[in-house]
Image (cartoon, rainbow, N blue to C red; front, side):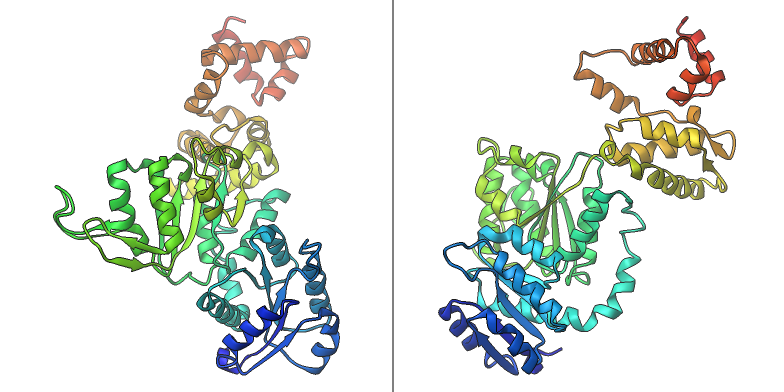
Length: 450
């Protein structure tokens, strides 16, 4: 819908805000009604039809909890109004604003805002409301459900969060161990954003040297340095009007952080060898395997940059903390690699799935993927059993280095002895707990002279 044809309601107990918004919108929209007292909502909604409602999150200046806004948001939804609600919030109430998305808000704006940003947000919400029905089926066939999988409650919460925050321009910080799927989360956000038809650019900033950092991100002019034989477009410029995904953001130096912060604050870049600034319009997504508390350590990472990149965070749990997702993922990878290596008809039996569920997966989903691929390649039959699954020695050795550099063979031997003793020498029970057949266990008993 064109904003010129839209009717808007603005509810805020700050008279200055109401005047400013009405002055801004009166020439942009068909109709703008302002209201200082939310108690009058019911009568206003009964009398008028609105396409957009701008709703403040605080109406009691002595309290400022934001809960008042959530209460009136629910009242609007209960009234049956079809208006899209944009919440108006202070920076300190960002978490409540995100919660408002779960309660049905279409977007939120942080005070103080730039007029162009407010107009852009209103237009985007109008456009999304108009095309929502036609776009939803196509979106549901994208990454979520095809590559990004999970039946666990925690993953369902993440999927819900993606659906709510993706249409906004909020900066997203994705936290999770290596191999948990941070790149997939970033791509899913882009696919569900209003920038989906514009570029998605990924940069592993943790791998950039000090000398390459500025050139790679901001670009350079010919002759800017010795090897600059031609002009180069930086990643920020390449991602203009789209999404920029900065992976491993926690690994950049304090000097690089200062350069990045300046660009994000000013929303413009200056290429190396140039004095001309270029405006940029990007949606920023960052990811790191560090915990948020580690990022807050100002000896290693600037706290002001953390705030800049972290309007909303998504925390992806390690695979060991969502084991109910392992069978779904394992069967997905089995089907994927069976087709790739022309081994159609291969399945995982219960012993294989049980063995996978008992393993800690220090390499997370990435290690599970490689484990299944290896098993498909090496399988002698169409059924993958527990003994066909061999976990990555890279991950196992790496994890054991933390507790004393133990040999992998000693770990396996000690585990077998412990389980056999636990079951008082009952080989059948021991084999079941280890995820092995009796024959495979006997082979290991002979191997280790147990």
